Image (cartoon, rainbow, N blue to C red; front, side, top):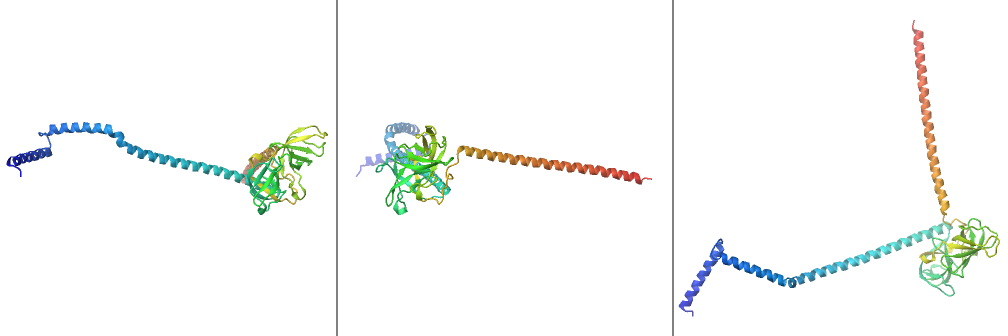
Length: 345
């Protein structure tokens, strides 16, 4: 049990504490205001110092969380960017495939060929041939050996080997390939042979005296039954001629219409046309297009001139009618005046 002196000291301390608390709660300038200000200043300095010292440690968690969020956002953006790039590539590829199919259908419609579309899935030599491709159509699709293969530009080659789901096509540019060709302008025939180069063919006329000029287009002469080559398919354009008329070694260099390095969609001719389409499958030449455009412009100008002449004639007729009306009015006025004078006594 506490002694009397201890109890008195505790009571004095409690009363003093209560007094100080009451005075502090009342605010204003009291006996503790200076001490409180000093303590607050010292405490503020200590807090700022501690914040400066420990801020890297305390902000490490926030920095780590922010970095993880940013890294996640960057990863998501990169994934979205890759997806968009893939979609753009697929869209461009789809457009190219659609354009190739449209061109193939144009050729098939112009030449009345019944074709089976297919896609080139592999490129490489096969057997004794250096220039061959593999397409994704075979015997299950109705493909047979020695069928003609075309695309939207012209002759590609012929079917060499057929499996159930794929077929091997030997290209026209192969050194062992040959096809009968016909000059579109003169109807002269000859032999078109591959050279082993993708941009060059050789053409030799059967008649060494026949006329041949640079710029002539060649089409297939056609095989019996349309195999291996259907008639009327564009082959290429003459770009050079060696030798003169009458020489047996007269050979023309032909640039093929088909670029075999960019084959994608092709068509296998499963049924040739009943009649030779002749030159109807050939694309219009630039000169002919220019002449057609000029002719269209001339016809339009002639129509406008005729319209102007018609308008001028109509205006002249209207002016003549107005002049006749004026003359008639004047004559009527004169007659009226003469009648009035005659009736006046």
